[in-house]
Length: 397
Picture 1 (tube, rainbow, N blue to C red):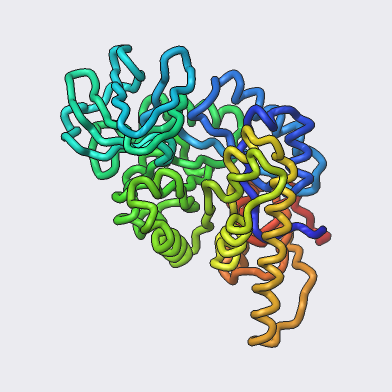
Picture 2: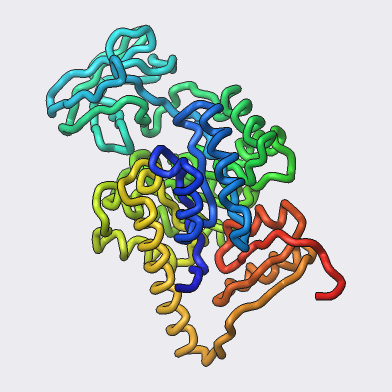
């Protein structure tokens, strides 16, 4: 089976942290290995980075390593890290002082009675029933299981968390020192957020901005302009703007990024059912295929490869769906435009702007980019149809 033009981003986790599994992911079609710094220790992340570097040697293409920041998010911690089964009508208490479910210190005074609060990308829906100095109470609106270290959302409420914490800065510098290739920045709300990250890492590491808030949606244009790529982070975004608005939001983000010539990653629950099953749902196949047809450069797997039971099978299935969608789109283009078929194009080392020009033409065939410039290898690792290969400049080619 040929390589897909669309790139596949895989989250590395307990199911795939070994060198053998990472190599299997690469062989199955992974182009970018994502490390989520919301989970795990730096020691564990360093071992993962080393494993990816070892596993990508000799595969014939550059496999990038992405650091995904924690961002200004709130993560809960249940007593003894145990799951809590809740039913509609139950009252839960969240506190920064250790009473009940633990959360970080936020501006609790910003909360009001009946404010909606969500856990785990909306899996648990709640209403605020009481507010105290060090916490608040909520009434559960939908039954489910509250799990430790899951995110909590406060749509349209300024809870007083800084956009780039010192912990994020330390994580980023740790990643840069140890050779990560790009940064996925959580909850980017404006150009200022991107510029602040840029001051930390400099110009040599691409920044992909995750749009996952109402404010981020309002500032799409400036975010796309100032970033090196944009991620449609559908989990938190769906909670923030309402699931019923997610379809149009995905299209708007994609359009804004493409206007600026920036690559787009579509993420969250693309093949969620394959965490537990060996085959995806029909709707998931359509979701991935439509993202490809719309022009997304990358599709991303999270829990499917991090903790799923079938990580390699998931990547293989996603790759097959991407190829099917690409071939359908290519057949349609040829039907209307009479385009001849070309197997591929090889580009030797050149200036970044020259390769950029090729990418902006939305290639329908693979373009192999051979370079010894880390920026070029990193930049085009998330660009559809571009296959970066690390090599030396030669006057003979």
